[in-house]
Length: 150
Figure (cartoon, rainbow, N blue to C red):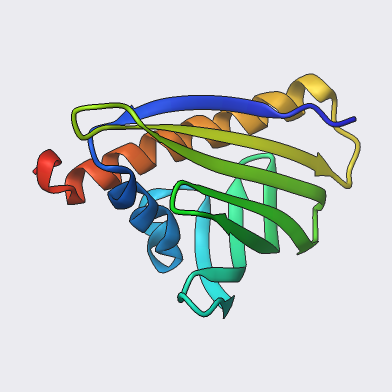
């Protein structure tokens, strides 16, 4: 069974403000470092992305991938790999929990399995770098946009 890597960060904004940034795939290249291009291929009746094509460059992992997204209420989104050049599987989740006084605790879980042989320790380190950069970028982006972070 694949092991996942997980990390959390507190963002000084309401969960809805955080989720709005997470759901704005067109802006991912502006704040995620690893995402060079993002294109929503399909959306649900609420306008939330169901399939997204991402061109990634995360150092050891460079890829053109399509992910399927599942939205659970207003505080959770998860994704799974549809197709990829380099990855065998990719499963991730953003979970948002109100942290009081207009802030949100965001937990990011990620499991990646690459097609090429890679030591588990190196793979987990790459996952940790991706998660930490994504959370730091998300925090910066949300707090710049948030009324409380202005």
